[in-house]
Image (cartoon, rainbow, N blue to C red; front, top):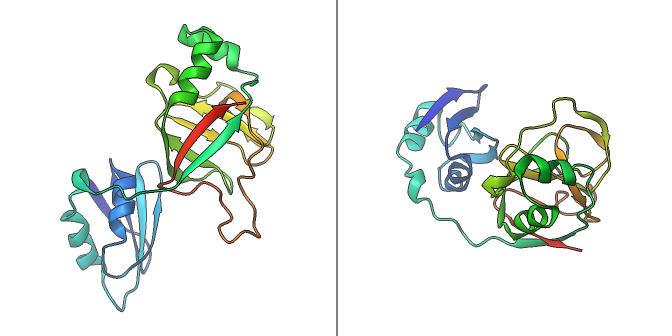
Length: 198
């Protein structure tokens, strides 16, 4: 089910339970020039010369998001040193051993759902249910760049040193954001990600 809200002169904000499916389907909607997924929404920016708010709202309502094909997407392989400051705490809170936490985190097949928080930070879905823990009650004032972390339903990697409240499992040397690259973000919506213990 989706709820469509006007968002300025030439955009709609769609609240949906399937943001990645809607993001994929948006490429087929006439007049859509940009689709930006988030946790529970997709922003659709459109060309008013091609479509309007009413026509696009009707088109969204007719989408079958349950059967939206998932096109082949590149898989990014990342090596991780499982040396995070919260690894033992995560093991304790989940009732798993350190090795089980590492094994479950590395075994999952992740998909980039959306980006946010800071340039290059990708929210990855597919986290093992056993590892789903809330954010820290008190965020850290500084999380090192390259930190691989978990929070709620997601795993993610801090592209640069910044404050953060996610639980740190490890680190990677991957360059997640490079403004001079053709595609600055290494991880983009729809991509698949696999972690390999270093």
